[in-house]
Image (cartoon, rainbow, N blue to C red):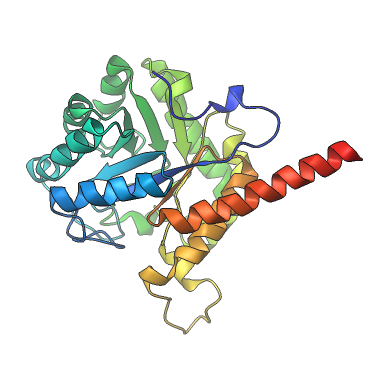
Length: 292
């Protein structure tokens, strides 16, 4: 098995276009589209539409991780996720399961998922890393300091880039130590998870430092709260979640410039178009440099 796209170590010197990971939330309470795709048929139809628009893989999750969210039971998470994973996999879609629970990850892998996207980086469930290693699955380890109910109280940093990189490196080392294949390991700086807006912007500005850890990097800013506040005054209301796709697309271009492996987004079309612009500009610059 290999992850879609080339691992960082095998990429050419020129930056590669990031893949687009489409978000399929099968939850009633996700911050962006909770409840919109709760029924399996709706979720599968939505996922296939995202593939048609250019998504290379889909991330299916049954637990909202917005700040303050309460966890569903394992049974509820399984009921939400597994039918959607099975149906999308049957259509030949590359599926990532967004879960912190090894039991859910195992069932999703049985249903056809090939990647586990664990926002806790293996900290929420001590069985997760061993499961992923034993199954030979792809693994996305995100920077995490605690569950959604109280994570924002832990958004305290002296140097957010250095601390996130150090803590991510620790999760990388833990995953490799139990046998997760290095070429199947992806890192995610965890925007919005125990991060204030200034932390998210700083991590975006220095995303290349995360890439320098030596593994593919997933950048997941889509529609998050810090994008709702950009360009707004301190006392102004944030722009609605549904009006954050242009800002999301702009961050996808920044992630491309930093060398990210993939961007995780709710609206595929706007990010696809933005990456077309980035790719065309990069190609023109490369051609101009060769001519000179």
